[in-house]
Each structure stands twice: as C-alpha cells, then as structure tokens.
Length: 86
Image (tube, rainbow, N blue to C red):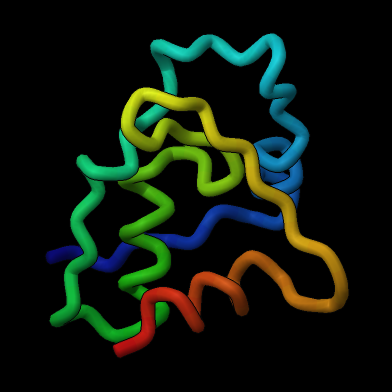
C-alpha cells in the first residue's frame, strides 16, 4: 500500500463545518464499508481511514447520517489514534 497523506488542517476544518441539515446524503460513506488496515502503522492507518470515510466528521451508519464533533483539547487525530490503535 502506498504512503497516504493526512488532510491539512484547513481541509479538516472544512470537513468539520459540513452542515448535517444540508449535506448531500449520496456523497456520504457508509461506515460499514470502511476497512481498518491493521497491518499499517498508526499514522498511515488513520490517513487510510480518512481517505476511505472521506469526511470523518460526517458519514452514514446503517443509513443514518451521523455528524460528530470533539469537545475539549482532544483533536480528531488524537481521537482516531485512540479508536484505531491496536
């Protein structure tokens, strides 16, 4: 698997700004379609997850649109690291 780049801070901010009320549902990825590649190092695993989900802040889960946000000092990258680490 080739090296996958992380989105820039500006790209992540744009993703976070998506309005769940107006988002085109057909552009959202179903969470069940995302595969976690456990063999990748953690940073590449996170980048690959973001590449697959397209917007880690807004996606579908069992057909339901989900919008997430993070409170406090924890960044998306830190949260994903905890969720995806093995």
